[in-house]
Image 1 (spheres, one colour):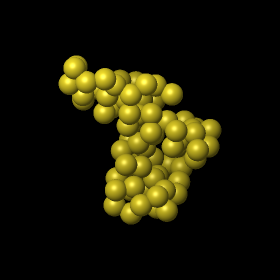
Image 2 (cartoon, rainbow, N blue to C red):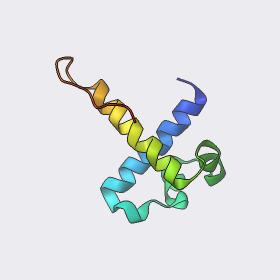
Image 3 (tube, rainbow, N blue to C red):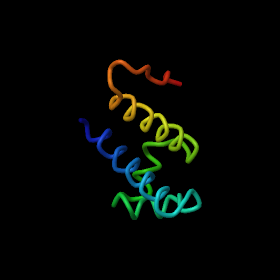
Image 4 (cartoon, rainbow, N blue to C red):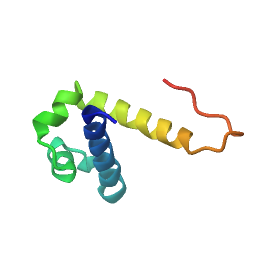
Length: 79
């Protein structure tokens, strides 16, 4: 796992936790930054916009969940 990948995973884990605990209105750069212990500038370095961050987050969730499916089940297509 590269440093870039691990930082993105920190952000994605923070997003997932905030969504589950507080809902989508809690998804500010400040709250995400606080939760994953990365500076806001680091987060914006990896994502062009909040929309880009969310698209990558949802793709991460789909990929993660597909990896956990039994081999006999079909997987979701990539976007």
